[in-house]
Length: 217
Ligand SMILES: Cc1cc2nc3c(=O)[nH]c(=O)nc-3n(C[C@H](O)[C@H](O)[C@H](O)COP(=O)(O)O)c2cc1C
Image (tube, rainbow, N blue to C red; front, side, top):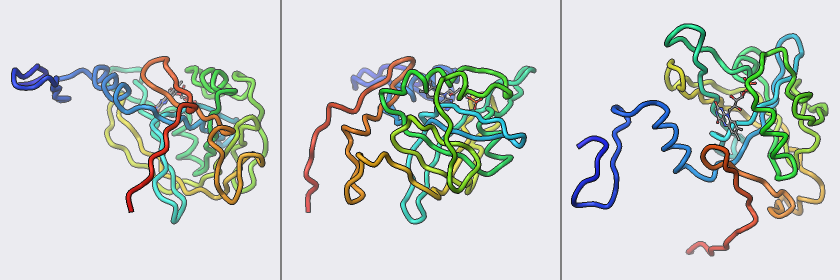
């Protein structure tokens, strides 16, 4: 049976085909937790910088060093139509982006940069974060971020064409930048990085409560 409790199991079962997109979004952001936050900087063709956080974000592989994040399609002006988020439009136009890791110190500023503002607004100004030049791409890095990855676009994959459909942006990392005190022999100090993640809604999470598990040989 769809979207119902089965008498034989304590689990609720939902068939996404019979749910509203908003309900599915709430389920996904509620159970896929915690999600790291990519604070993505891009630049449009005119050179206006853009900054926005994306928590559908992960690493893909290290040879070549590959990452992905997923800007969803926005509802357009007419019913059923869509428009790309500024980040997606810039990435498709220029083929470049920077992923800035979000520490607790800049979590509020990263959140401020998620405001739905017109493309001509530079969210660096809005959030108070400082742009610094990248080495291999045009979009600037966020100076206050403890770690940044300069990326060139590999592929854009549309999983659908409706409002809320996810678009996978795959990129190759051309440069890694890490604050000097955080790295020793390529090992990154998690306490110093102090990365935060996103749960559902307005809830974020710190990475200070960690456990160690020895992998079986
Ligand atoms: C912590 C956080 C995580 C977010 N993750 C995503 C995401 O994974 N995908 C998405 O489409 N929007 C996400 N958003 C919303 C975008 O940041 C928001 O739509 C932003 O205005 C997009 O900016 P842009 O139009 O400049 O690209 C997130 C917002 C916050 C605060």
